[in-house]
Every structure is written in structure tokens, then in C-alpha cells.
Image (tube, rainbow, N blue to C red; front, side, top):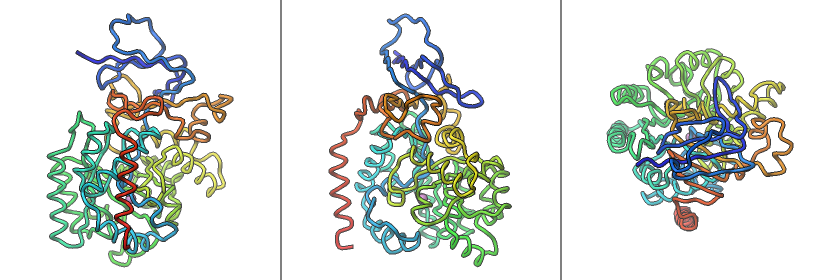
Length: 435
Ligand code: NI
């Protein structure tokens, strides 16, 4: 027997070659799938298991966070106001060395709690002990694309990481009702030499899965790459054949014009992380230029120790405002651009746009509802502007993933909020003790 749910809302945000808003609309959900989105129809109530009639509401696709390290929530506010390399080498890597499996589980749960409350229904994660991340996703009901972070400086460790990734694919790819997918996660060109990255590319081709990597995050990374290989990171990735695979590249802050062309031509999916790039003083990515050249750009928060939250509404606003400010041109990166990056482009970047990113018939039911009865949503001239320029992620009151309610009236239904906060606090304190 199918579970059939009808959600009625004052507004529904759909996509048809651009965003469209349906007033007094409804969405019919059969198990995990959307079977109707449109104006309200006369229906026989006995065919529906549950009708949710909401007022002052906007139902839209859930946000897709395309770059994070979920369990790094445990290091939120542990090391701030430092440069990337100092931050990594002096603070983050030493404390990460103490992480145990259970810590990853609880840190990820804290991230999922925060993401669901803010309307994020899917995230791309790169970290380690990824079975624990998968377990957290399985239990909470969120959707995720997970990758084991690979370091290739030492040959043996690098090869072990690839084996571990293959095992991850076998155990988790398309598991938990298809909510979990797997990518290969070579950390970055400065931790993975070219010969190793070529092995990663072959493995990705063999397994038929995408690659998730950090590229051109800081100016010094680009300079070091030039000094070592005579090429910039994107040129180097192109030369060694990595870009022939499906690649999700986080950051891409420091790019030449030629690199922007390569990114567009090779259809590299860029995860733009404006909050993290600002906080680590890494710079401002040429987002307006990337969009102008037709590059696929989505939004990520990066880990909560370099952001310091996992708030996609904040990330949309930062992405738009920052580009306007630095280019002294308010017409670049419109509200619609920012919203597209946070939803549909996120789905495309995780190679999941057949399934998620819009509320069209046949999509998986990953949706959220904003409560519009808030002063900052009045008057209502333009809903998309409101979402990007005046919304707060805490306005999200309902979250559904894969046809299952995960949050209603702001209350989490699948996870124990108090327990997560308690575990995360105690584990984080233990980890940084004596550091
Ligand atoms: Ni990152």
C-alpha cells in the first residue's frame, strides 16, 4: 500500500525554465515521489492518507549544501581568525587525529540537526569514518553524497584510501532508499600528487562515480602549484585527465580567465563557499564571471569550523551581496541566481538532478516550508527576493526528504535533539582537552 500525502500551501515554488510561483497550490506525494504539483484539484479524500493544509506558507525544494565536512561541527569556534594553513596545521589536523568513530557520528548528527532545521535536505560531505556519516544519514532521513577524504602523499596510505572508498561504494552507494550516494574525495592537489590523482580518476571511471575535491582555495596554493608543476591547479587537473570525470570542485577562488573557460568547457561543477572563503581570508571567488561563462555553480557552507554555521540562507545572501559589492555592480548574481545555486544547481552538481532540485512531477519529495507570517516577509512584492535578501533559515518549519516528514512545526521527528547537543558538547570538550 502506498502512502499518499497531500500538502496544500499558499505558495509553491516550482521550476519551468525558471522559477514559477503557484498561488493556492498543492503537491501530491506518493511514497517517495511527487506525483502532482499545481493548482488545487477536487480529490476524493479517501484516496489520501494525510492532508496537510498550511496557510502563510511557501513550499519549495530543500536546500542542497554541496560542500561540507559535517562532523567538523565539533570544532565550531575552536580555532577562529587564523589563515587556512595555520588553522589546518596548528589546530585542526592535530585535533582531528584524536577523532574516533563515535565522535564522527555525533558530530555529523549535530550537523544534520542544524541543516534540517535550516531547510537543507541534502549535503555533500567529505571526511573520514564515512560509515558513521552514512549511519547518521540513514537514521535521520536526510539525503547525502558522501566521500572519504583521500590524502595521497604517502603511496600506501593513498592506496588504502582508494580501497576504503571502493568498499564505501559497495556498502552505501544508492543505499537507504537511494538517499545515500558516494563520491571519491581526493582532498586537494597539495595533498594528492598528480600520479595519485590519476589513480583516483581511473578508479572513478571504473566505479562510475563522481569526484569531490578542493581546488584553488587560496592564492598560496595556486603559487605553490605553479612552482611545483608550472601550472595552476585547474590547468594541472585538466592536463592529468581528472576533468574528464564528473568533478565537483570546492572553492575555485583564484582562477585565471583560461581556467574559467576550462571549468565551463569540461563542465566542472563548482561548489562556491563564500562564508568559509571570507572567514579564512582566502579571497572572493569570481562567481559573476563563472556564471557569465555558463559554469555550473552551487553553494556550500564548508565545515562549521570555518564558517561557522551550516546556514544555506545566509550563504545565498552572502553569495549575491559579495559579488555586487566587489564588482560595484548590483545587477550581477541576482536573487534568482542565488536561489538556483542553492537548489537546482546543487542537484546538478551532485549529479542528482534527475531526482531532486525541483518539485516537478516524478521528482523525489525533498521539500521545505517557510512560514511567511513574519515581519521581514511583508509586504510581499517578490518571494524570491524575500528568500535571498530577507529570510532567516529559522523561518523553515517543515522538512520532508524522500517523502518522509523529518520536521514539522519546527520539531525534529527522527532525531533526539537534546541527546545530540549533549553528546556533541561532551565529545568536543574531550577532544580539545590538553591541546
Ligand atoms: Ni572543505
